[in-house]
Each structure stands twice: as structure tokens, then as C-alpha cells.
Length: 422
Image (tube, rainbow, N blue to C red; front, side):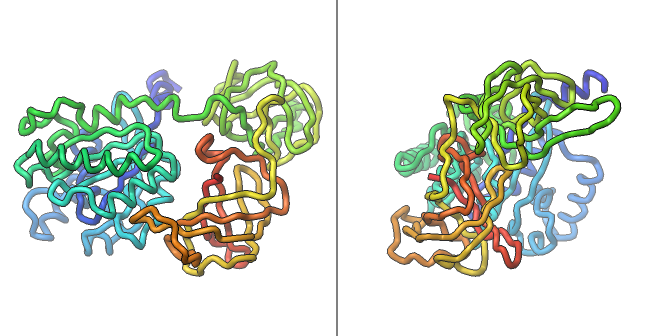
């Protein structure tokens, strides 16, 4: 592999999700980002021009870049999560373009669950509306570390500083009730490209960075938990070949902390102790490994370890338990059934569980707890569950990887809910 490719592979990856009400211009903004950062191929460009012409539109409709489903293009809305990949000389990006409609809350949760940053779009003419509050709440619930509030369609308010300032103060007043740490406000026009990739000449009063500059430079290195060592084993590797007759390695993805050869570790659930002999990666042995690297660890002792076990530090263990409190987003047409059994998936472990109690449902618009405990499609609520086997978990606020679960319907194998452990 030549050095250019290697450097490209080692570039930092930023995952971000878009959220906003219908017609706030999410798809147009992503189209503008790709277009102005020269990340569109010529054949895509020709197809865009042709489709825009067929629809009788002036210029190019950049929203068509992400709205891939025919029904999306016909209705002019986003229905499912669309993932787009692009890169600049500084970073690689994965964008999840998520729908704004209330009936697609589950799609937004899916797209946002792994994001470092959420792009919240607000229409400069309408200001902070219920949908904005819902999306900010979901971003805070999913602990997305950074939020960029893009106040779009500034061209329709004559690039007014007053309109921008009012929306900024309204949003800050609401966000003070939520757990949102890092918020940036950018006035933009996705249609005309103001402050998206290039600085706007129409808004000299704005001294902050453009959206692209923020995406390229925002610090995401500390988004991962590098304190609590967590290594769920996915697979035991035993080649038993003539080259590696006695090799036994434990493969998986590090979900927290930093591991080095020589470290003393404890294996859960058995509690046996050992030392790390070596850490093997695709590029050879590593002197240290950290979240979110995928590696293969070898230990100095032969211990019976299998999928679902977790390698941790003796003095820093996760919570081990079978009774768990979870905030869930329900993703299935069938409503939640108290005392029903589901399969629970957590890191590399699967178990069965029973829903002991539905504590409450949240009104996403007011953030109040509701008396009605019937949780159905796209609802968010708090439940308590009991699992058949102990899980090794942290709270979701401490570690998004070891603090998240999914529930699966045993009869249909459909994912029924995504949950955050409290």
C-alpha cells in the first residue's frame, strides 16, 4: 500500500447526522456541502442537471443528491436515512441524512446513534419550533457530543442579524434544560451557499467559522471514553496452521479505554486474571490500542474465553447485573407488551429478557412525563427489564458503546427498540 493511501486510511473520521423540520433544507445543505467541496462525480452532476430540468426547475436541485428513493424525489421529502460518504484533505465524513417527520423518529435515532455531531437546521423565518425541540431532545438523549445549529434560509430574511440573534437566544433558553455540552450557531443559506463551504459576503456581521471549517476542525478525539477499559470479545481466533500452531487470540472492537501489552486484565464473567501478551492489528503488532480500534488480543494464560465475555481492568469494572433501567425508542408497529420476553443484544452478548415495568412515556414536545404508559411506534419512554444472564454495562452517559442495547422480537427477529442504559 503506498503512503498516500495509508495516510488516507488513517485520516480522522467524523460522523454527523442532520435533523430539522420538513422543508428546512437538510438535503439541499448536504448537496451544497458535497457540491462546493468538489465531492460530486461528473456523471452525478449530469444526472442532477437532467432531473432538475425534467422537473422544470431553474438551476440544479441539490436536494436530489441525497434523496435516493423515487417516492422521496416525487414528494420532495426524506423518508429513510440516507448515508453519504465524502472526504476533504483534512478529514473523512459519513453523513446520515435523517427525515424530519414525526412518524420517522426511529429513523432519526438510527442515524444519530453513532454520530459525533448533529446538524440541527432551523428555518430563519419560522425560528425554534416543536420539531426543533424534539430533535434537540433526541440529540441530548443520544449524547451526541457536538451540535451545530444551522439557521438556514437567511436569504429570505434579508440576512438579518436580529433574526439570527433571536433564534440563537430562543434555542439556548430551551437547551439549558437538556444535557447539551457543545453548541455552535451558524447563519447559512444552503440554496446560495452562504457560510456553507465559502464565507458569505452578505453577512459581514457574522465572525464565526463556516460550516465546512467547523466540520473539518472540531475536536472529536476526546469523544471516545479513554478511561474505562472495555473489550467485549467477538470471536476467538485459532488458525492451528503450521505457521501459527499455538496461536489463540481474542478479536473484537475496543469500546473504551487504552490497552497495552503487559497490562494486567480481568476476564468477565469468570473473574480470572491474566496479562496482555500482545495486541495484533491489520498492520502488525501495536504498542497500544484504544477505542474504537478493532484488534486481536493474546493473553499470557490459557483461559476459557468465548464470545460475549469482556476483558477489563481489575480496579475499573463495569456494572454487572440482570436488572436494568433503560430509556428506549420503540421501533415496531406492535406496541410494547409488559411481561413479554425479548432477545436483548448488548456489545457482543445476546441474552433473553423480560419487560418488568413501563415507568413512563415522554411527551417529546414538552419533555414532560406522561401518565399514559402505552409505548408504541416512535415513542420514547423508560422501562425496567430483567435479563436471563448478567450483562457487563456502563451508563449510556459514561460510555455510548457499553451503555446501549437493542431489543429483538423473538418470533419475527425484528428490532423492536433501541435503548440507553440509565
